[in-house]
Image (cartoon, rainbow, N blue to C red; front, side):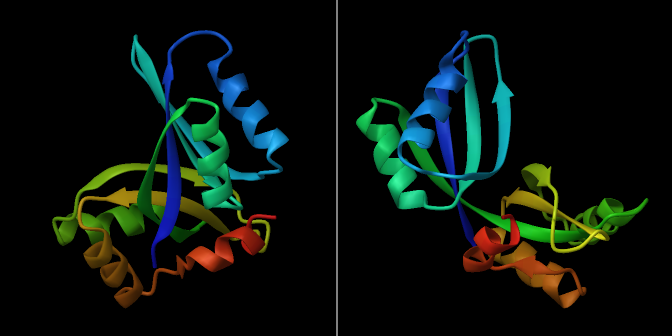
Amino acid sequence: MRLEQISVFLENKSGRIADVTAVLAQAGINIRALSLADTSDFGILRLIVDNTPKAEAALKKNQLTVGKTDVVAVEVEDQPGGLHRIMDILCKADINVEYMYACINPDTRDKAVMIFRFEELEAAARLLEKNGIGIIQGDRINTLLK
């Protein structure tokens, strides 16, 4: 149920994201999904890539601060209320969402993919599956998001 996400910690200044994308491009890493959060001093670039170990090694070799986090990829009905259905299930079970971001699902036009970081990852994934919400397995995400 888990999916590895890379987090890259960056100074909040011009060119830092380009530094990361250059390293990944030179290493032959394909970015599948991403999110950027920032403050006045730094940013966190969260990435789902096609080869996490290779990406992590390339980024660290280039003196970038990298962390790994487990997240869950969830299929969301691409219609009004699709995300609310998931949020309502989580709310009723008192499960906290730390953050989330979305990407498209080229396999189907009626579902999107949301990447979630939960306070209680396994409990959230089990609850969603029990309620008929599709969880995308880590090994499938690379073929799905091509």
